[in-house]
Length: 574
Image (cartoon, rainbow, N blue to C red; front, top):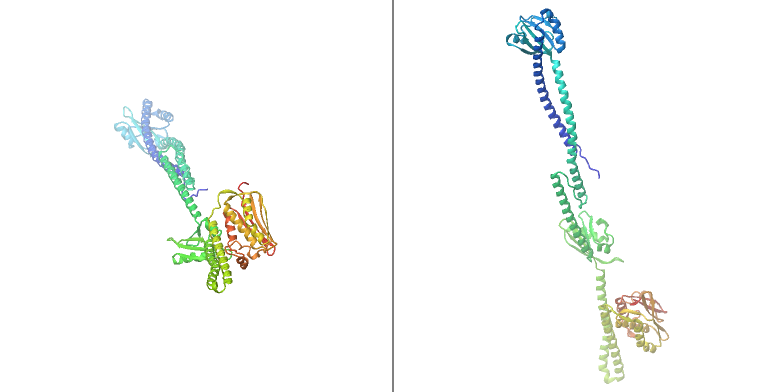
């Protein structure tokens, strides 16, 4: 990740070096000026003192030289001393000069240095020479007898050259000191900037989500404290993130465990959240409200947004789609919480309850009506028609038995619906044999051949419930078979399961009824069922017993050919 650089901003080390360079230049300039000024003063003092010594040396060297020999002697000394030497008489006449012809020179008695020397000793002056027109420094020494004045001078250029030489040395020294200072400052700036850069990198990684990182210690106490604070902040942030993640996972688990679908919709129509149940109920939850299906859900959410009130609506089932209840609750921040519940099973159970009550009432009404009618007729027939009275007694007896069968099957159905199936190992082949023997005579009386094909097989369950299921299957097969038909009861072990089948060559079941034969009170042939004493609950009992034992039930049938019912159970000892 590249670091964006703002225009006009530099690094810490660059700023430190720039600040050091500016301060160094100012200090070097200031101290250089002071140094050069002091050096110039010292050099001038030293030059003046040296000129005085040289002037005294000239006085000594020329004291015994006659006036005629002065020019030559003065020139030789001037060359040796690298200075201008002038010998002046007490009246100001120039007797000798190492650079000019004395006769062409004006009287020097009024020169400041000469006048001072004639009055009270050595004379000093710095001025532009009237003869050379150059700035010079003069020192004049009078002779012992006062007859002569020996003057020596140097030009300002010589003094400036000495000052410049010293200035050059000072400049070189300052440059060396500056380079060394820059190197030292660069090392110091790097030493200071590196831990800051490290802390910057640590802070960046913390911002990117690496909360387990800890800054390295440095030699700077303040930066160590800053790094420690960043480390503590990252640790605290990591703890808070961990707590937030745990709380989010718990909340997610709780929301996913809800039987209702939960969807959160933003004011702009963006879907912010949908739990797992919502995906199970309506399919994939889209990112926008406009793509949410069923489309009625969109309308419910928009109405909640617009009205600011709770919206509750039931979405009726259409085709394969389930029946849904949508509850849209507007939140204070403008979002809407949509709770979707699949109430298809509830609606189905309610419908089954209504149908059951209606069917049970209808089934009970017929024998009860028969009993009431027969009992009323009996009251009148006992004296008038004894034979007819006996027929009505038989009718009352048969209707009462039918009523008893219905009540018995209702009780059995209620019991097996709440039964867990049992937890003991039972021999399914022996149960078949017991029920086979019980119903053999009933088949024989109708001229039906009842046979069995069993193998030893054990299942986990309740022998009474399994016996009830087998009894209902065989009774149902006998009831819908006629004289000369055959009913076969058998067992077949297949891998880790056992298949119980009851096959008959009776009337068969129409294809339109195959999916409904296991419903309560459903009859393929109502008249024949009532004629043979069927209650319409036998196959419903078979289905519930099979499912309670972890099995499955199915039927194959062809009208006029016969039917085969299959019950598949897991073996207890595969």
